[in-house]
Image (tube, rainbow, N blue to C red; front, side):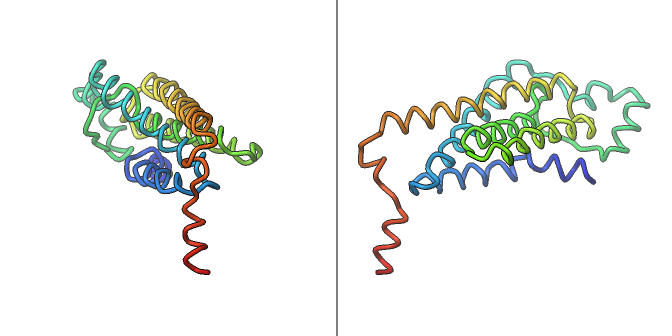
Length: 183
């Protein structure tokens, strides 16, 4: 139960809404950096993992590879017999957890709290191994790809902020539009 709960935070059911929230935060000056870092990290990580690496490596899941091994299959069934729809390398859940964790860590000023995110991301990776849907190397690959995507999301955000300094985009704040309507 605990592994299933933790693994949720790397799944598309969590990451897709986070990307949408990121996009929705961009028009607000106060949350623009956060929104952009999250959105671009998710885009980079998703593209690298699902469109490049998984098709390139096409590694079968452990439960496919060891389907004829009764000991493995009994443990796999004990862990919940989760069936995934795509290939194994790199772990998409781990990639997603790290892309979000690293991007949010980098954009958050309070590092005393923000360090929890990469640690929780590591728990997502461990949950994927526990549920027997990934090899350790899949998770390690996900850590690298997710960390790279989180850093890239942050760099893309910083570049856009720098390139648009003193422009209408930099000055635009949707919150101002709401304040004017109330007045």
